[in-house]
Length: 173
Image 1 (cartoon, rainbow, N blue to C red):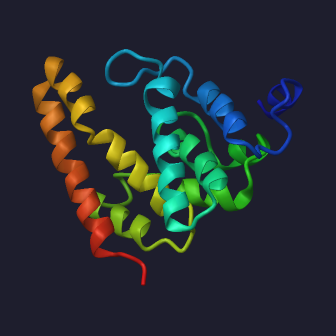
Image 2 (image 1 turned 180 degrees about the vertical axis):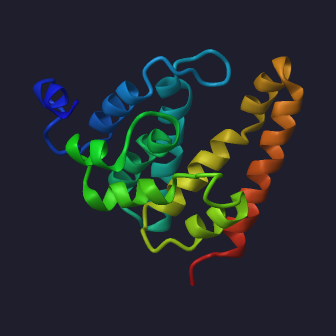
């Protein structure tokens, strides 16, 4: 509950990547990345790192992008909501970016989602999605997943290849 989070110090503004990762780690508590590693270490930290580097190259604020990247799966994969992120001190503009990055298969197809992401005017969205897709399709990650689930690794590679093609097709002018 919000009162409990505020007593634990989460009622203030999330203004650093470290604070964002700490809070995202609480949201994803108990979740594991594909190979049994805690989710925050196995997925969020590498995605944040990639997204921040891409943001810097693209001329987007890397800190704000890192905060978005830390929470990019929170609404989709945890009990987090727009309201809980706001109550925990995430900037409303960044919450809007996180919502753009949230895929709901009951609401849209993957292609529709990717076009929505690719055409978003929110600057932190594209570098976050690029970082997420690059990490998820990394040959080392896919090779590790293929050791126990080759079909899943193949599906992931194809899915993120299609995602990258849509991002490239809808490049901002």
